[in-house]
Amino acid sequence: MEPSQVAIIGSGLIGRSWAMVFAAGGFKVKLYDIAQQQLTSALENIRKQMKELEESGFLKGALTAEQQLALISICTDLKAAVEGATFIQECTPENLELKRKIFGQLDLIVGDNVILSSSTSCLLPSKLFTGLKHVKQCIVSHPVNPPYFVPLVEIVPHPETDPSTTERTYALMKKIGQSPVKLNREIEGFVLNRLQYAVISESWRLVGEGVISPTDLDLVMSDGLGMRYAFIGPLETMHLNAEGISNYCERYREGMRHVLNTFGPVPEFSGEIEQKVNQAMSEKIPVVPKILDARRKWRDECLTGLAKMKTQMKSE
Ligand code: NAI
Image (cartoon, rainbow, N blue to C red; front, side, top):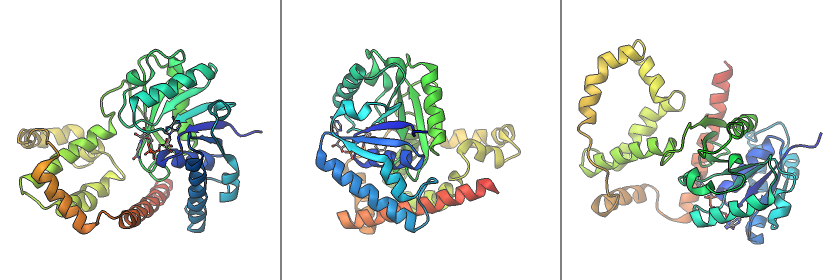
């Protein structure tokens, strides 16, 4: 049987990673970009990554790197790129006008059965898709960078998205090994960034008020909270840290409310505190492309190891 086909619009950081995720799932992938050079380098980069992953035993999916590479083709013609695709994942820069233009173009050339999905990190579906003829088939599938190693995908519908679009997208994400979650309605920042910004803003206040150093603050997460958050979420943490949620609330509701009432206002993320955090981070990891890249590579290796461990723990 011919493998199902998807189109990826935009071959940057996220587009490349989606292409690898879909190819690992056995899908034929057409990678589209306006710049031929960008496509050529995307393909080279994907080849290199797949080979390295294969050598280290971390390549996803049942196919070899060569077999997966054979599933990916590149294309600078939008119509040809989406021809035959059942799912289109848009991965162009985070710019509302640009994305609206692209979805407007896609709206004119797609049929009634294809799903139009955006990788946007923070543009609301109502901003992106309103007015499109195929709005029922439109959805946001927000990945986490890098999607190849971090499986979560936030699925966010437009108010007019057909429930079957949400269900099909959810099932597809599961099929390719990602970990989808459904938002029942759109909200600024979706869920992941709302949680992330809550953590970032309290981190910023604590460092700004001189309670803790920037590097120690990060350790609180990486060697503290983060250890369990890789396996259980904050709600299950409550459940397990007492005899269930109700018992936790009974024990800690007052304390939590007391501490939460001492939280400060939304930070400016500028000025002296910015300089202080920047200095500490830059001492640890100088802002030099080579050093940043090496640190990102190390991070990805850690995430790969963690992903593997999580799979093993699940099957035990
Ligand atoms: P990027 O800048 O690495 O890649 C964008 C690509 O789109 C480039 O290859 C560019 O040539 C191409 N492009 C520009 N105009 C185009 C057009 N008219 N048609 C087709 N392709 C075009 O950006 P990145 O980081 O891959 O982000 C893509 C999307 O994914 C954004 O919406 C971003 O918010 C979202 N996202 C990014 C994450 C990240 O950490 N980088 C995480 C989650 C989502």
